[in-house]
Each structure stands twice: as structure tokens, then as C-alpha cells.
Length: 231
Image (cartoon, rainbow, N blue to C red; front, side):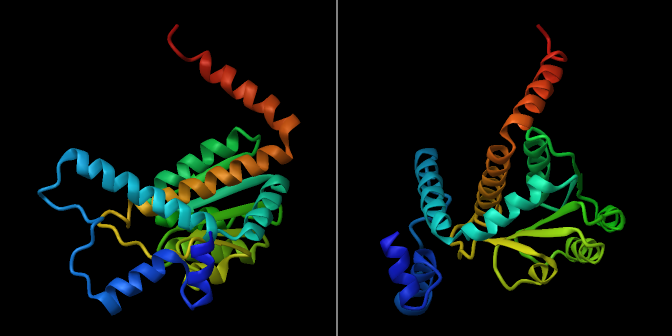
């Protein structure tokens, strides 16, 4: 945490941003020790993946805006319905979000089709929360769906990679990581790690606010699911 604060004090967004700028603009490092190369053994790949993930999550912990998380949890707690919009790699996280929030007693729907996102947004109301998940912050259909939902007076939340991207303009609440990835697989692995963490935090944040009701619903859901499993 001290290192992250120091890096921000001297004008960087965090340690990974500082490291990225040093390598690209000062040291001109050609090969990064984290990069996967054809000669790597499975043991080396394992170590690089895990080490990258640890470093990313440490940076992410310092970068996350606690106030934005609090606002999002408060909005979700009061919502009658939650709509989740996402495409591409973020679509898998949208389905995870739905599963997580259902266990807290919130009715959720997920749309990963571009046209259906727009159509579903037209049904949004002031009682709803609409979440757009896009790491790039530039997926047109998700941005448009969030914009429509915003006009319908729904509370809109953007879970994205960087503040200042187009999707942020359509969101009442922005949860962004603001981290520069430096890994071959970062566009998928890093993005999904960040989204997974955010959604897990929101799930537990909502659960702690609605524990009595949510625990009863979660028990009913678990019983219904268990009844459909082979004994």
C-alpha cells in the first residue's frame, strides 16, 4: 500500500502503471519476465500466471473506490429488479453476477445479445438497477442500453476497466480498476479477475445488508437445486 501511494504521489495511477511507464519509456525493456514464451515449461507458466494474478489483485485492492462500492450495494439492496448487460468475455461474468445476486434474494436478468440489451433497457424503471459490464468501456450496445435505462430513471452502474471511457458517461455509479495490464493474457485473465472480484464484493455487500431475508431465500434456492440432483 505504501508503494502504491508513493507511485500515485509522483503522478502515476499505481505501481503497475509506474512499472509499465518505466519499462516502456525509460528502461526500454524488450522482454518482460512475466510474458509467456514457447520455451516455458508448465511449471514456469503456472508460476507466471499465479504471480501475475497476485500482483494484479494487490494493485486492484488499492485502486477500487470504496465509495462507489458502497453506493452500488445500497442501490442493489433497494432494487426490485436488476438487469445485467454484457458481451464477449464479460458475458460470462454477467451470468456469474446473476447467479450470485439471486442468492441474495434479488431478481435478476441477463442480456448478452446486442439487440436484446437495447430492447430490455426500454422496460427499465426507477425501481430497477441496470449494470453494464464492459472492460474496454466502449461496447456500443451496452453503452446504448445503459443510456436508455438511465433515461427511464433506473439506477445505472458501470463495471469497467478505466474511468473516463464512454460507458462511464451513462452510469450513475462507476466501478473501475484503472490498472495497466502487462501480460500476454491480460485482456482476458486480468479483466475477468477484476470483474469477478467486484461482483463478489457486491454480492457479499448486499448479503450483509439483507442477511435475514437473503439467508431464508438462499436456503430455499439451495433446497430447490439440491432436489434436482442425483442422490
